[in-house]
Each structure stands twice: as C-alpha cells, then as structure tokens.
Length: 412
Image (cartoon, rainbow, N blue to C red; front, side, top):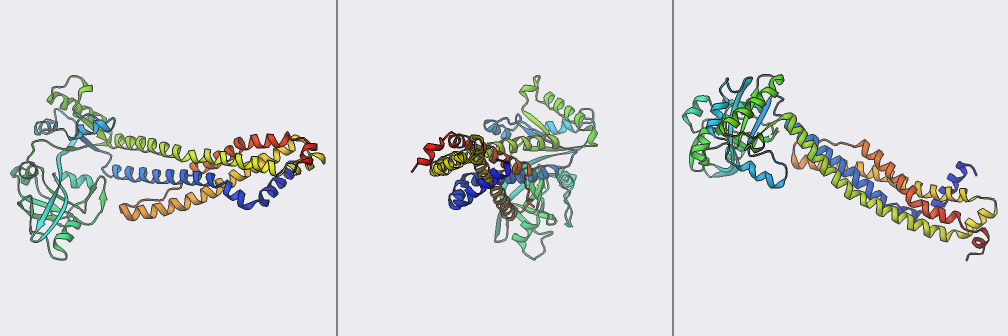
C-alpha cells in the first residue's frame, strides 16, 4: 500500500468519529495555546522592561546601596544606608573618576501632596536637574530648580502633569504653593505629559532638591540611588571601574566581594532582565507543557479504544492483503494527524488570546505594550505535538498491526 492510500484511510478513520477526534485533541490544543500565550506575554513583558531600561540612555550609570541582589533574600540590602554625602563628594572629584560628566544623588518616598482641600499621594523624588536630562523631559511651564536651590535647600518643586491636573484642574499652577509633610513648597516648573519614562512615571511625581528632601521631608543622611552619566559611551567601562574603586576607598573595603554597593549600566540591567524573564518563561512553559503529556496519554487511550472497536476492520484489511506495516502506518498517521491538527488549532487560539491579552495589558499598564507572536514557539509547539502523536500512537498502532486476521474476523 502506498503512503497516499494510508493517509486517505487514516483521514477517513478520523472523519468517522469527528466528535471523539475533537475531544481527543483537546489536551493538545490547551497545551499549545498555553505555551503560545505564555511566551507571547513573556516576550512582550521583556520588550517593555528593556525599552524602559534603555530610556535611561547608554551613558547612564546607576549606583545603588547594598550588594547586587542574587536572590529574594538579598533584595533587603537595597534598603541599606551605605551611600552617603561623602561618597558623592568623592565621586565628583575628577582625580577620582575620569570621564564622569555629571551625577545626581536621589532619595525617593511616597508622600501626600496637598493644595488647599485637595490631597493626592505620589512619588516624591529628591534629585537635581540631571534627572530631567537623563529622562529627556523638561518643564513646559516654568523651569527646573537650580544648583543654588540645592545648596540653599530651597522649598521649590517641579510637578508632573497628572499631579497638576488632580490638584489644580484647569487653573494655573505655576507659582502656587503646595504642602509636603506639612512643609510649604513653591511650584517652579510643570512637566509636560509623557507617561512612563525609563523606571519613572513622569506624570505622577514631584521633584524637589535632594538636600531639601533629605533634611526636611525624609529626615535621612543617605541616598537611595546615585545616577551618573559618562562623557562618552566608550568611557563607560573606565568610569564604572573608577566609581567602584572610589567607593571602596571611601567605605574602607579591601575585598570586592564585601562591597556594600553595586554599580549597574544599561547593558547590565538589560542582561539581568533577559535572564529573569527567560527563567520565568521556561518555568511557565514547562508547566504548560504538562498538558501536552496529558493530551498524549489521552490520545493513546482513545487510539487503543479505536483499535478494539475496529478489530473486524483490521482483520478484513489483513485478509485482503494489508501487511502489518500498512496497519501500523495507518494508525500512526491517525495519531500524528490528530496531534498536528491540535497543534494548528492551538497555535491559532494562542495567537488570538495573545493578541487579546496584549490589548488588555496595553490598556491596564498604559505603557505601549506591543503584541509579539513567538514564531519559534509556534513551530516548537507544532513539532512537539506531532512528536507526542508519534510516541503515544506507536503502542496502539503496534497492537493493531499484530492482530491475527482470523481472530480479528471472528471478533464481535
């Protein structure tokens, strides 16, 4: 029997029991759909985070307290107070760090902002004008506070467009006074609407001089972060090395393994994001793949039932000259065709659900979530589905091919 005849016979066998065939591939469909959905959403999340990280610029360096996190338990070190004003003074000396263009210490807290009877909670950031340069967002009304304001610990603030809208509505806000933790601040600048920029929501924040925030708002003598900028991208490795050496000197650290700070560049952050999202995606795909195994077992059981129900058919075909190879090929083709069909349906549903999920997420996070269809996952899913059909269809096909023609014809 030629292959085309086996294919036609197998297809006819599947069409005879359409309902059972549809139920048989359900596990495969669910598995492939889940894999496509997980990988699509995972890739979308990775692209979104990487775009936010790249928004800081290729010459930006982030210095944070505590050792670099290696697991959930080490994240607590990010809240240590190891970065002090003496560190900023040391880093600003050209003799210590060559190629450093500018830096700004930062302190951050969530606090209530009040104007007359209106109050909103927002992110209060203590920084300098460098944060505006790095994020590439400058006031469209008024201006940013100056270095003199930082030295004088002035009570001035720059607010995001969303804060302006919530507190003042259509009224003019420039020059008005707001209260932060009971202290009065004069608004000197209003940022234009820009949404999420890098790791900051520029519309929902209030920026004040970091010296003011430290002394009068937060009551601390350390920094949560130090943002630095190298003169050129080529000088990044040298600047990072000089920063590490300078901080070890100011912290009296001889062993790099005992650093109480960590320095991150855009490339480092991107690599870390890709590693984390990759691990999570593999984990979730592995869980979703379990349904493929369950679907394969279901196919094997159904095929065994099909072999029993079609015993007389097998005997008749053998009596007419069909070989064991012909019978085995027919039932293997049925199993592979079932799983391949399940794979195609799963890919279609996975693409549809992924597109729907991207639409919903883009509305929820409002960050321009982009739909991504993982072609590699689709091809992998289709290949795995066919492989599952081949593996789990092998035993029923073998059982069918070994049936005796005489016994099969006498089977009731």
